[in-house]
Length: 310
Image (cartoon, rainbow, N blue to C red; front, side):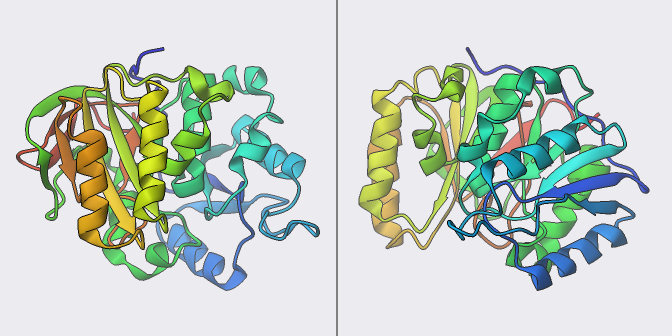
């Protein structure tokens, strides 16, 4: 399946109910409360789903059982009174719950906003493939950067409420790793999650005609090499139109990480922009996935053909 434009959910408005889910790790209660306060300031009515505050007794790195996490996501997506769904935090666990979701049942419902990043990459991929709905790669309410960085929060707020105001992304840090321009539909996220998805039910996603987003955290250079090499060997870069690289927080010396990226991506014959400011960094910009855009590596910009949300 080639990358193609997906159905865009409607934008949010004051008074909308949004569901907070924990499809990965357990939530730090104090930080979640701070994040919820900002959502309320935006005029939203956050609803913490029933199992979001649980911790699995046997595997404490999971927020409750796989079945319960899947049930929270499915219930939120199916509820017509819920306008959007936000992952409260990342961690690990999304892949474990994906096969427990009744995707055909959800496909019949109206598309809605989904926000998340990091481990949520697997959920972005599943929503794109199974529901054909565009999503937002953006900061999450129980993450320290959401709570502590005004610019990150404001960019997400504008994307949710006034997406035409942020239709062109031009992070001040961005520049060409490989020069050039390309047009395509955005997709991607965490490199380790994309590599881990190879061979799964979501493996039908292809890069052809797409603008690939890549970022990562706490992975040494040789492990980044491993993920990117696996993706190359599996054909995940075949036909890609362009690549935007986000943050590589705590992934080792900058020169080493850059050398890996040049070695594994620099010969693909497509423009590559680096330091694009999304992912595990501060500020962290919100990037729509599943929306057609033009990448200009020389200018360090990503301009979307249409607003992220209707």
